[in-house]
Image 1: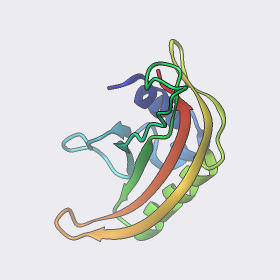
Image 2 (image 1 turned 180 degrees about the vertical axis):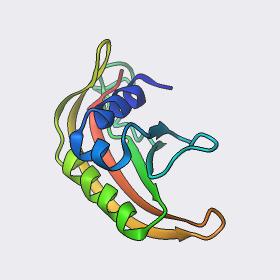
Image 3 (image 1 turned 135 degrees about the vertical axis):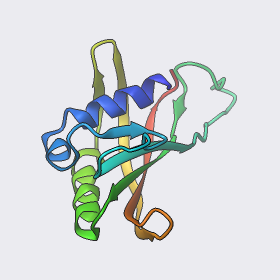
Length: 138
């Protein structure tokens, strides 16, 4: 897992509004088999890079990856509450996230969209939220 993903997982696990709803069940990309619900899954969707004559596409250049945060729960109200807590923690976030030696500085995190769904195959509610997170390339 990349450094930013580790930093954001640590950041979410340290937020009382999040842990009150999911404990420390915040995962990268996949829900572990037989995991307890509710939980959050964080997935990188894309990483657009702004490449000009002044930038190289290398370390230190500004990037704006899009991350998806999925709140999985057995009830719609639980999934919705998790998404609202995520919005409170992430939307407008600037500064350092993470802990120990795994930290990243966010220039700005901006909520892009939210969509609640019923996942029939899993028989679970999923509330998806996407954020565009501006930061320097590591």
